[in-house]
Length: 431
Image (cartoon, rainbow, N blue to C red):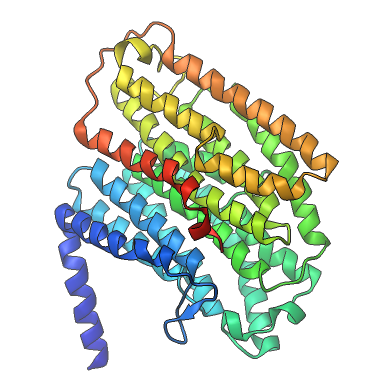
């Protein structure tokens, strides 16, 4: 009887989601209700029950998920199956960000793979989406087996299957820390295990790219924050930090010779995520806060840039930077949006990206190697950003443009407003 009641409730929730208007109104209401959680002053996690918990980090990422889902629904047409797919993905993410059980944490971490895979296969543009799906599944599933084995071993050793009741600090060895962190670093992803991300972005529809860059990559960062706060620091953390420093510069080099706008944005995401990893690998509350701010700022900025790439594709029928040019003359509003997005991606003040970088580098400044690598990162990041700006905005365009629609302008504004206001809300972003 109880199972039937739960099934009836689930059906009653999902049926209205076939209609885009009800979905959008529901997400707007849920987001407005969730935002005051940032002012709750939670310093410790609040256990809703034995299986679910909430803290500031959870509420921040849940609001980011809701906000991104609203933008996705605002852009797309009334595709009922896509709406249902987005809602199922959103439900799995909300559950993942609030679960306290180790095994449920793993299951929900992998569950988000299915709706994303459906978005790539069902609404992708080219036949190469099959190869992109293969890479996505291979990296996500195969490398998750060590995580499953490690979590099962931790449950047996610690005697508890919940995060805040298990003594992971004493149970984790260096090998176990390596196996657990590898899975989350692949999801971020760290350079050298990033090959699935550009392929998935290029073949995914705009909503797939938005949710992948805006939220799904943050599941890796969320997992690192959860497990590293309960594990002792080892040489594994230092090794990953060195690799991420190298990776953030290498990804900038790759951006310099890419002409596909989606590939440039994807490798730019890899570069930013590698910089975020350096903050997560340091045992400091300030770098953790900087990494969380970077998660949110990157989620909004990368989602915005993928949306702008799709708007350009609809007008030029190409993602090539050699064809998408001359926007300054033929589409000044789109040119303005691209310019602002590129500036935010560079981390120009008062953007949230500049605040997150400042929080991280002030802790790591005494390290000469870090400052050298960070200086190179700043130079090459600014270099490829300026190249994108010059290519898109200048030149002669041979394409007939139609004007930006109202809903597209609203979606862009909904990305830009949080990006500028986050820097004023640092005390609410601290974890």
